[in-house]
Image (cartoon, rainbow, N blue to C red):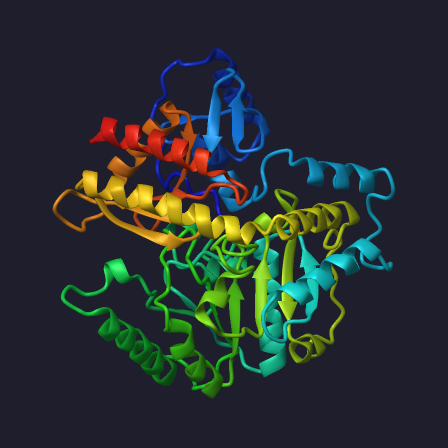
Length: 449
């Protein structure tokens, strides 16, 4: 959910005088925006100033074109300046731009109806906000209200947002600041098959994770929790995929402790993982609450918390979001969802994701500094390690990121050590562009190798 193409605590390298135009823009930003933003906007070792985008492509202010395989952190889901989304947005802006949630608004209702139809199980009632952070906040509040319990369990390496409560939920030191702490928010071991104990089978590792959660609930809580919240595939955590039976195995433990299951689909939603609308459908469980943002509206600031009727009914105190359900943002969300639905882009994500995975596995076989390739659909991670070991190699990962940019390819980076390349093309990417992007990444890896 966050801009993590570079480690948040890393000082930027001195970039070459490659562009007086970009340098001038950077100087202006440093004068008026939060200083850490200037450090974070470095794409690898130097900043990239965007001029415009169209479809799968971005152009910088120097005129160089890039194939975008990161989509603004998995947010531009159906292409830059998608005509369907642009037209729907302009049409709504010519009608009414804002009313607040104090009034009935049909476009907001239409989006909520779509979410009720798309999400699995009995999820039926939506609350709209501006971001994934707020969507997760609403989920936690609803869980505590519904269950009457306080403790919330999440996974290490999770990222939940930038508010005080969500920084407490987040299990990355780089993303915590200001002394945020909540004794009722606790993290357990995160599933990552590549990082399982040496010599342990996948089956034994799953048993180990389940036993660890059971022991945690019995020793680090009073036996009662409000919720267990997790991403099916961790985004900032480096595209770590939960084992196939993980959620089915842990769900009974959550229920026995009086908690509900919250699934964070901010990055995995809307067909991103292929085959299904929602990532959790691969695991065959039905959450009580799901949260969405990013790709739901192709770049518009929309967060959504979708709940079962009984969870929603428990929220009795007055609550609203001034810009949540804004008609213009809702028009963008509806147009994005409709575009995905009409073109059945979850099928394209499955097909092109398999094609991308084949390319990445070939790349892994050619370079001993690639330790793992993992993911689902158009959400693929490449873990960079010291050759011959499993030791993370963030410096080499950054070098590949830089080389990819030089080859005209934009990808992301994440993971606890900042050593996992994140490759996430648009949902409507073609096989020709998958092949082209893979070739550019291959040239970048060869330059570094």
